[in-house]
Image 1 (tube, protein in one colour):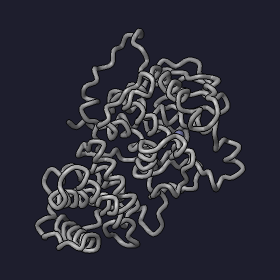
Image 2 (cartoon, rainbow, N blue to C red; image 1 turned 45 degrees about the horizontal axis):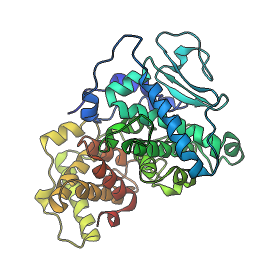
Image 3 (tube, rainbow, N blue to C red; image 1 turned 135 degrees about the vertical axis):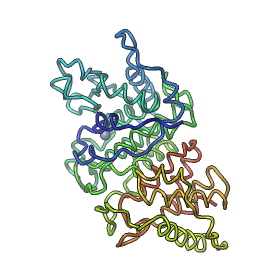
Image 4 (spheres, rainbow, N blue to C red; image 1 turned 120 degrees about the vertical axis):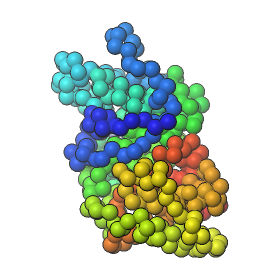
Length: 403
Ligand SMILES: [Zn+2]
């Protein structure tokens, strides 16, 4: 089941998860992403003010989760957020809280306020959009990211740490680490270890969708003070936490991930189709895949007919880009060669990782947003969690992860 266009979502929630998300990121085209059945199962918003704020229960769960795991992970007792959490209805307006002077300022937003040691979020637009467009897991993923900043305030890197060593702790690192902490909470939610918040273990892709959708533009400076990472980067950070632990998130560095934001030698300004037509794209894809498989497996080259684009793939890929369509053709060929599900996903991720970055020109893998194009296309297949993890491993680690 595919959800409808998300233009409204992007407009109001582009600043979610990051008070400092650059204006350029807010203008990102909305990727074709999937919300899955979880979102479809959500009942329409009740207008009664007596309905509980779903974010509030997630915040309670986050406090429970961190109280439980923090001492063993970090060797110290957990100090609760001194200002707690506050939901403000940006639509109603009125007084703000913590870093926010007026409620209207927080529209579509949520963030950790270091001065107050508390989290403030918008109940008027942000929470309903997350819940209804993405599903309840998305509320958990997004607020858990903010809570991750509160964890960093306790175990470092703190604001002071960052000021003293800005090269070691750029915004990109701090944001990806918060994604990692979010991943640990989501995993706990699948195992009934996250207070009252639960998540279907097969719904990781849906839960993390808002974090992947609200990513940087490809030209953002990875050393800049607003960087959050491309979707591929954010997914890797979340998966690092999902598969690991809070202590591993604390110990991670940017080298723990295969960061794509700021990759040198790739175009950040590509705007026209880089191949004249589908035939040229298909030939380039077939040639690339043939070379990849010959190197990686020693197997016979993929038959020419194995790379083809269906009408449905074309329609899905059109708003994303030609690399998205190429990756769909590769995914289909990999499915025939290695079987469906995690195997094909891993090999597809490995192919994307092998062709990116290709230096110079307008070729497969030579544009800065190519990994995200492939990821967005892959997400439209509504992968289960094992399949999403396999794709991520294939991209980050190469074909060794697929054998
Ligand atoms: Zn953040």
